[in-house]
Amino acid sequence: MVEVLYFADFKAITQKEKEIFKLSENKDLMGIIEKLVESYPVMEKILLELPERSIKDTISIAVNHSIVKREDWDSIKLHDDDKIAFLLPVSGG
Amino acid sequence: MDSEIKQTWNGTSGIYNKGTVDLPAIVKSIKANPDIEKVGSILTFNGIVRQTSKNGQKVKSLTIDSYNELANKTIQKISNDIKNINGIIDLRIIHLKGKFDISDDLVFVVIASSHREEGFKALREAVERYKTEIEVWKREELTDGSSEWQH
Image (cartoon, rainbow over all chains, first blue to last red):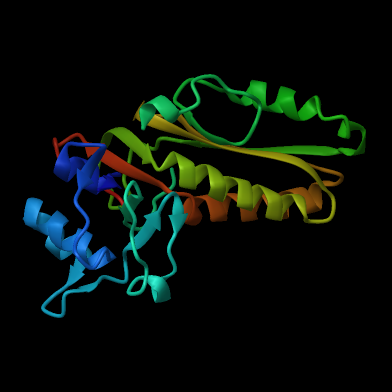
């Protein structure tokens, strides 16, 4: 099980600050994204380029409070208790 | 996540709840630096909530959300980079979070430098970087009832 942290738009969509998801068989980021989209269909167009279903360039991804480099998105393996966050471009005040 | 937000200001840069720190307290903490005798200039930037959005719409209130763990790390990185500039003695970067009314304080950047020139340059760099690098998001609530997260 991993914990997905929600900020800004994602918090507004889910009405939650965080949520537990089961890891996919591949234990990869795409597995979590597919579960998110299944629970919240509106996230599909925020997270994914369609119809390719690749992760959008506008997204940053953090695992355990560290940003994961884009080149590592495909290879990273998630573990139980990992904390994952999908982030949209920031907008400081 | 709110339980992890610092509720009282401990004198350091970072993300804090609205109302926990003000500009005089930050200047006071800078002046408590043992190296204050090397300082000839304290420059301050105070970002506040503007009544008009970028698109010219009328703003009623503004909400800031933040990923505290990442945002605090990024603020630390910006601070370390600025402190390494020759002539910069001390600085604070503070971004507030919560729900804000028009003209409320949102951000403080305070730079203490030996001379004003390097202070002005460092202040601009710190402000431009916090705007685009730290993991915070703002939502403007407009007077027509609509609202949207800004990116």
